[in-house]
Picture 1 (cartoon, rainbow, N blue to C red):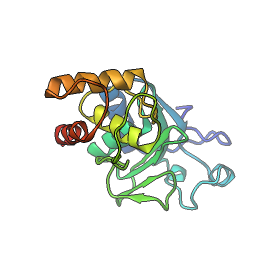
Picture 2 (picture 1 turned 45 degrees about the vertical axis):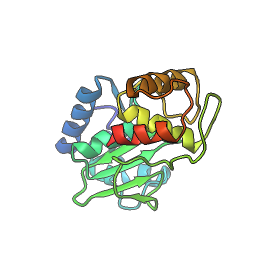
Picture 3 (picture 1 turned 180 degrees about the horizontal axis):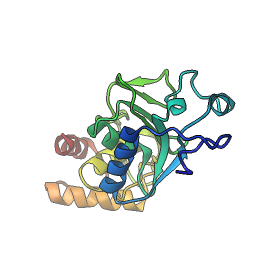
Picture 4 (picture 1 turned 90 degrees about the horizontal axis):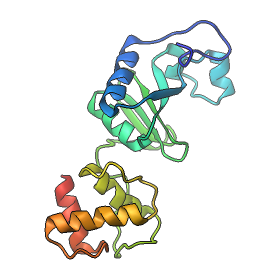
Length: 195
């Protein structure tokens, strides 16, 4: 209850649909769910720069962190279980979920609308990727590895030792050259597997 509470009031508003959704998220990932922001009074909402008509003020929204799970994976699962409002805050490290009537998804701010979180949000690289590379192309690779079962790989844009091991394992399973380098054939196999 204290996690849902606005810091400037003893009154707490909580939508039971939101509680049920958070419990489903907790059960699915088998990990603790920390609520960074739940119910907000109008004054607290204004102080933190919340939207004028924020669903937090109605007890219908929560900004959450699931221990050991990326905010994108939380957003994807929230979409699967029917969350109607989802915000993926990649840099800040949390996911917003709410129970509004209409469907609205966004990344980082309300103006950055997304149709779905179930497709890869990163652009496919055109050049080969290998150990030591960084950036959006590596995030594309890591997102695909996540989707096909390499859940331990963090989507951090850094092609490190764990990412290379996962790539080599995938290449071995697909009958590709096992070199840990992600070229066109490996990218094509990843896309086919992730469908």
